[in-house]
Length: 183
Image (cartoon, rainbow, N blue to C red):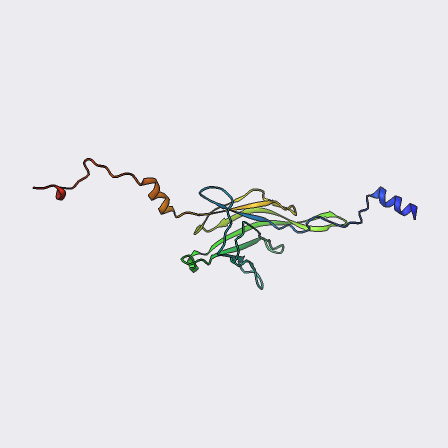
């Protein structure tokens, strides 16, 4: 028995099992495109496009600032929809989509942890209704709990921003028409 314990200690046996996350799922964070700061979004239903069964990842009922977007290991791309369910934005033509194209690689982590998939994001496309832009901070998706995707939402109406920038005090000088003059 002492020999078995000695061999186990020498070989680095670990009886606690694999404590690391065994899934490689990219974490996406939400940001304002105008301030570049982290935001929480609500009233946005998020789900997988063409996914089997219920693919709804967020109902939009509660505010979230980050969300895991799992990739399909058997496909080379996965798409997500962002349906705005707040009043005034709940139209089919305002649904945004993000599509990730990637290479899937099987990775052997250890004897205890086993194998897991790693993804290399090779391309990303998105619509721009309320999503302004999407940034990939690291194209290698591993089992580390790190935000790799930043989704920037338009948080102010562009027309309102332009009006604020061009709004000036009215001139007291020569701004009159001929109809304003007395004859």
